[in-house]
Length: 340
Ligand code: AMP
Ligand code: MG
Image 1 (tube, helix red, strand yellow):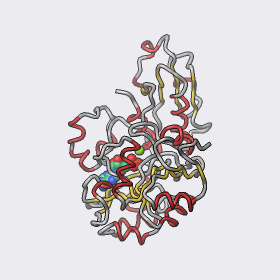
Image 2 (cartoon, helix red, strand yellow):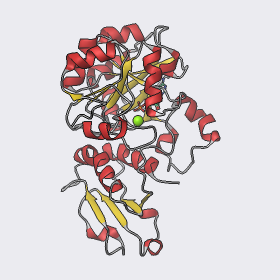
Image 3 (cartoon, protein in one colour):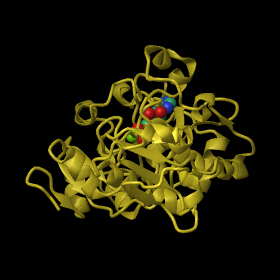
Image 4 (tube, protein in one colour):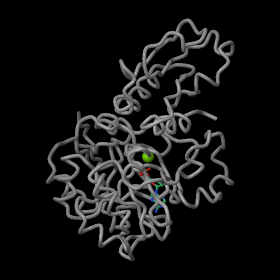
């Protein structure tokens, strides 16, 4: 699968050498593929922003394999944070915590906090242990586009811009981690993801959900959005993100008369003819599951969106997911993927 510019391998020691010497390694995790660099090396971190074309106001998540590194990066680890780490690490949960000086400003976009996660993937954990460094890793895709869930997706999108891909197979969770701000009185969900609000609340009792996370995503990526209080808490959570090149809209928001004569694709959770309204023929259909299992839907979501995007359609229509469990993370991705 490798191309001449970018080897794809399962050789962890080789990947660790690339990271130690300041290189960029994309690696599989249980959520999506990350584009990793030594979080303590500002030049390496700057290359991540460059390769992804990611704006510097959007801070990176730092990945670790053990709690020793956590205590070197983080100033204060509250009892609530300990409960969450015990319950969900390694796993798809990112905690935003007060940071120590050692973390470069570039990683945190100058914030007094750092986002930390311990991924639950054997190869990723082996890599982090072998390199023995904290690894800053956003998703391994150009900024704003569909997240990668296989090594091939990374090769297709960033093949010429990074040093190596560590092939961890297809991602099992398939959506990004849940991001929880741990500095306030009550934990606050900044981004829905692989750990559900219901799961968090079983461990901690009630948690807050930042209001912009559950809005209808109708705002555009305007200056005012970047300057809003919500953006200050959760920079990078822009209303347009995860987008295919083909325009995407929610099925429920579209007047079917307006798509007559167009080549339209459909993304849906289950086979259910009634929900297709009066559009008789879709040029392409992706059905995420046989039985509506949201975990499977999440695992298949980004790959299905990529396949639809490759079909040269005029429009992709997507059904909303049930607004519970992983359905919230999926609806969040869908709303942000919609074209404005
Ligand atoms: P990703 O693009 O998946 O790497 O996720 C990174 C996201 O985590 C950013 O876009 C922010 O929304 C959030 N994040 C990372 N660091 C912080 C931080 N220090 N404070 C608040 N949110 C953060
Ligand atoms: Mg991303």
